[in-house]
Length: 397
Image 1 (cartoon, rainbow, N blue to C red):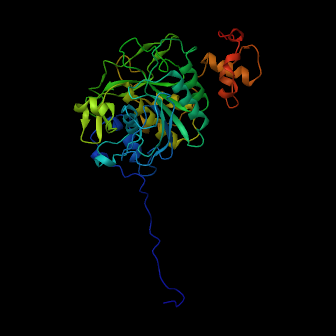
Image 2 (cartoon, rainbow, N blue to C red; image 1 turned 90 degrees about the vertical axis):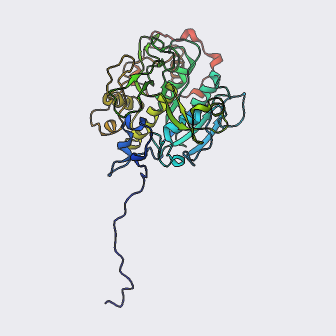
Image 3 (cartoon, rainbow, N blue to C red; image 1 turned 60 degrees about the vertical axis):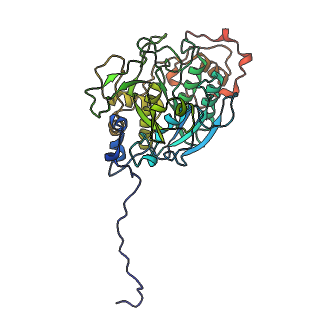
């Protein structure tokens, strides 16, 4: 025994405990349908969306054990209400599908990216209504603050009430601006059924538009059907939507206590902490969660690249109105092909063309190859819209 040695310590291996989620306890199947469970359970590099910020532009997010302290910032953009809590109930449900960790259910009800952070951007009032300006301001706030909170994904489970081309819609302008600034934008297709994909932002060709299926409560996709309410069709500008689908019927998610949803739909309440919801509004956050998982594994990916990978690796469904099918998070993460820009050849919204003109000190719009444009120096706040000469913009270019 060496007198200079006080103690011998075994240099034992230490195992990570980042993934406490037990797939066997799950009581819902949507995380498995998009292959999120595989990413949580990867023994080498488990992925849960850790540190990825997902902005929920909705009715607010209520405090809930499943969300813990991962709602990292809250802002209100609706001038008709105060506070950022969720009196309606919609935003809290969306947040749980994206990033709930199952704390209150002992792992029965877990979101797709249970390690992700949430950015609560309230735009709706207590009835679910939101002015266009509130939505736009929330999107633009997310762009400005994206680096502070590592905001990489925007979820908009909402639709405009006016039909118009994506070229002239101000909401489409805002989501495209976010997309071209590096934020993945996921939106709900709408609940109007066949041949109805005509409302912003679901009609925008840049973003990821999500329809809804009925998974019949089974992991197998053989019995899945397109939900009868799920919007699909060709937009005013000739684009087929949705891009993908996700389960959107009887989805159990986090409940905002004493909210409109909780009080008016008691038969949908599950226990005391959860509620069962249906619609493309609850299908979109499934895909937002899958996007967060992918970004955790590939942090430098651009939105056009991520969309391309998701479409290329989705599990096709032989059902009209389902786009590329179900996103497959694990398959997308393992994809080793070229990450091309799926938005190649698209013509941006007219408002973005004005931003481009302002950034480059142009008085008229030249013919531009939009695929080669860098949007890094383009700022929404630098434009005085009252002084814009709209006639100077060559919209056809």
